[in-house]
Image 1: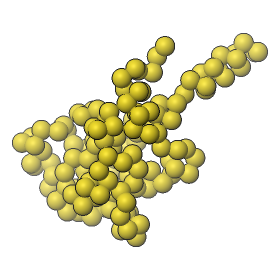
Image 2: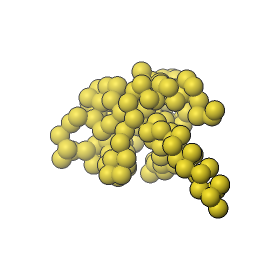
Image 3: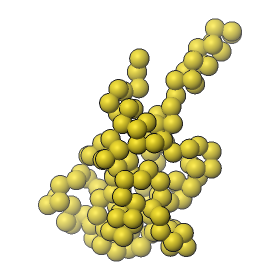
Length: 139
């Protein structure tokens, strides 16, 4: 039993904010179909009738990288893609957080999920995310 506890403790110590956050994102279920990729020509029909993941408005949307590409987020992995209106996407820029917009308008599904995550965890930094994806999670 002692050995099991020691191994579990070592596992917990290895878990980083980035690992926790990526696992959280991979398990999220979107209320609408996520983008099928990132090529503009293949997404034209998919953009119609979608709501923004941050503000919830049904408006012209584009692909949102939940972990921004500039922070090392994967470009085409479906778990890292969502639909976002352009004002939310532009306001968020390279943040790994909710867009800095008026909280009264942020009623989208991803906003709610991020608020729930923030209640018990902290968001990783861009550096932690880059390290996670460049070095992997195994040792």
